[in-house]
Length: 203
Image 1 (cartoon, rainbow, N blue to C red):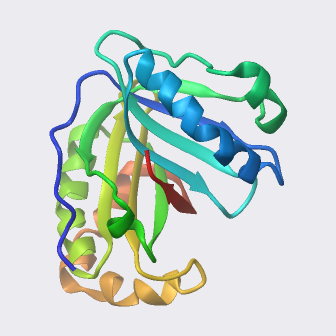
Image 2: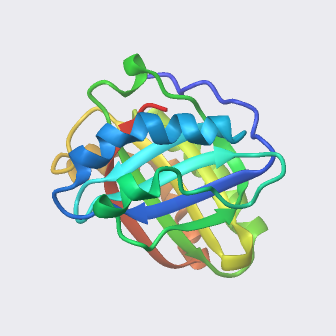
């Protein structure tokens, strides 16, 4: 499968994360369209939205604004019963971004990955940029990548046509590829990492 088209990284990219309360995801999703409209009215451009699905629903929103470094909390009285008060918004550098449509997300789950970076950003990114095309040769399409440089945190996601239980087997060929084996030194730059399945939500 071909990679998704890349879009020009926007200025003022923000990574916004928070947790939805257990058993409240459907309620939160019902409120999302009004929340999205409020953010757009405030001048934000919404790029990508993901909900991690293997524990309490964790939401990752990518948005941008040319002059703001935080997101307003729209409809707090409606949202408060459904979310924890653990939201964090951080300015990030956008290293890669694609757009989503109903056709591109159908039948595909996202795999959200976050790395704690050590040993310098340039060496890490130099290796990661070589990893992406190898991933994509095996049907894992890169969705976005952002760098939170002050906090040494790299977040990215790719998707694939399958389920979370099928994911380990789906990537065996990728990890056995000689080109990927030659890039194992990427682990020199990852002090810690987290991997979660996620649902792609259209914005």
